[in-house]
Amino acid sequence: METDQRILHRITEMADEERRLRDALAGGGADRAAERDRLGALERELDQCWDLLRQRRARAEFGEDPDEARVRPQSQVENYRS
Image (cartoon, rainbow, N blue to C red):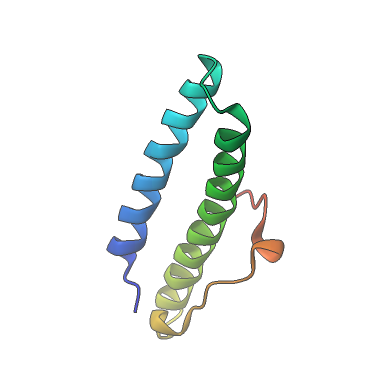
C-alpha cells in the first residue's frame, strides 16, 4: 500500500534522476539514446505518481479512503498537467 509520504519520496527520487539525465544529455553523455529512453520512462512514471497522489488527496478531502486510489495506465495520465 502506498502512502502519500512514500509517493512523494519516490517522486523526489525520480525528479533527481531526471535532472541528472537532463544534465548528462546537455553535456553530451556517452549513451544519449539510452539516456533519452530512460528520461521518457521517468517522465511517464512521474505522471503516474503525481496522478496517484492527486487521487489520494482528493479522496481524503472528500471523506473517502485514499487507499482505494489506484495507479492509472500511462496512456491515461501521460503528459498530465495540473
